[in-house]
Length: 393
Ligand SMILES: Cc1cc2nc3c(=O)[nH]c(=O)nc-3n(C[C@H](O)[C@H](O)[C@H](O)COP(=O)(O)OP(=O)(O)OC[C@H]3O[C@@H](n4cnc5c(N)ncnc54)[C@H](O)[C@@H]3O)c2cc1C
Image (cartoon, rainbow, N blue to C red; front, side):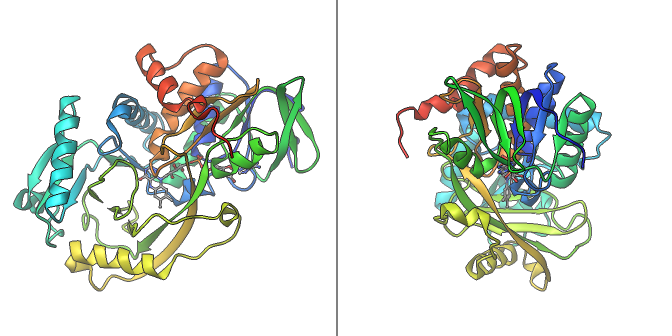
């Protein structure tokens, strides 16, 4: 096994897409980051993602930041020779009833006011765009700029780019705790007992970030939430042409939310969230099975929308754990201890945000902003961990 350095500029704890993107941005900003991943790179929620990259129905206040995030993935795809299977297929948000239509029209009006090229589709326009969607859909939203990427390939490509830019990254390297002295975090202690010092430590360990900070008496309001997905056997290319989603009522994944898409491999990936589950803190450390009710609701919705897929065979299912904050936005910025930073959160669309968040945080840590001033101000306001100051465990 390659030995770990005794000292680096910045230690990033967690090698999911958020930690890898942070390391890439830090290395590109001239710092020497070290990523420490407890298991395998991208093996937690990152590898279980549907990895849709889009702005539509994700919250108006983050509109500019999400637009930047999508552009960063497009550029990254170009620069990696499309190794990440970036597919700008667009998104349709189906409406089954009056309530869906009212929500959809509100989203479209508000997003168009910000300059988005989105519009409502009639049922017949929808069928022209998505011929297999012959279920009882009354109207839909249309966001032509939503894309998907391959979550495994993208994590590997970001890791390779970070290494090429000067980052060091080690998998199967669990961090046991933080090293603190004089009110400052000065590094980490590995499970192996080795100590590594750094000028800054970034917690990018998803829902595990809370425990690492908590051991130092720092409360981080992030909670694990169980999420799951199904994949069906390969279908001919073009069986599902867009990201097909439900209309989000509040922004972010919520009860009743559906996402269906076809991967480049031909597999149909789909899920319908019946209701958000209360997840025990230690659930994330155990192997979990997909709940039968979730399987039934997801298949019901898939076949309701795409009756031609009634005989489709399931291939696999998986459970992962997202990290959710009380307001469902990321925590990205300094924690209440010198030298300690965080970049974690989720609400079902952290893959999309990761390159943008990494650049924001790298700019804050190195003191050399990477995002432009307006975006940086938005990110500092929306993602500041201190918005929860005073909230106790
Ligand atoms: C079914 C599903 C669909 C999704 N669809 C989308 C989508 O369409 N679009 C989108 O943008 N997002 C989507 N997401 C969300 C997205 O996948 C996540 O927001 C994103 O992957 C979060 O990445 P992360 O790096 O923060 O977390 P993780 O991937 O969980 O990474 C954290 C890492 O920290 C490591 N770690 C933990 N403790 C330690 C320790 N002590 N020492 C070292 N390492 C440690 C873990 O092993 C893990 O690898 C979806 C998620 C799911 C489950």
